[in-house]
Length: 199
Image 1 (cartoon, rainbow, N blue to C red):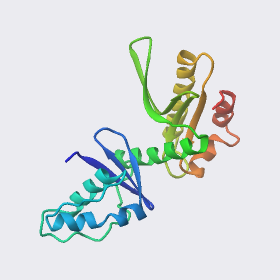
Image 2: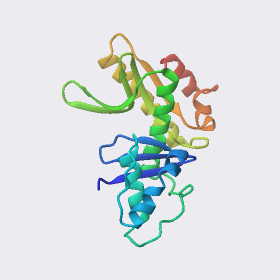
Image 3: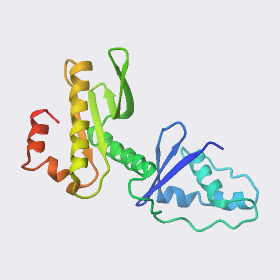
Image 4: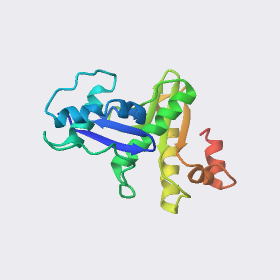
């Protein structure tokens, strides 16, 4: 069984296998296939197939436990510690999916190479059209260190554009929470700098 990380976010599960390719599973999709857990507890094979079957199968297998153990009811929101990296990755995947839908393009996590040796990661990347995205999942007003992190991410996008996209690229810092974004969209020097830099 391939290991999967499963993060609950409202009515959506963000399922990420070891390949790193996340997939969103809605509550209705999960409930429709909850019978898989019962099948596992009975020691039988579930024969349904959907786009998310392997993902749902992994969830059901983990939740059902060994044969003979009754599967628990469908889970609600699972509370994880603040700053949990798996939860953050799941939230960033949701943000990236929302930006992709809004722009009508496919954005995927990317690793770029500058000067044949410097590797730099971006949360979302499209080459045609050229788009660079950093996703920020923080909730609530940012603290000083968090403000610095956002500005560092923004500076990274500007640098990547200048080195690898001489004709320009759309640069986006995407926030999950308006109160987290407020400092960077209002009347602060950081907001003014981001606007001037085309972010």
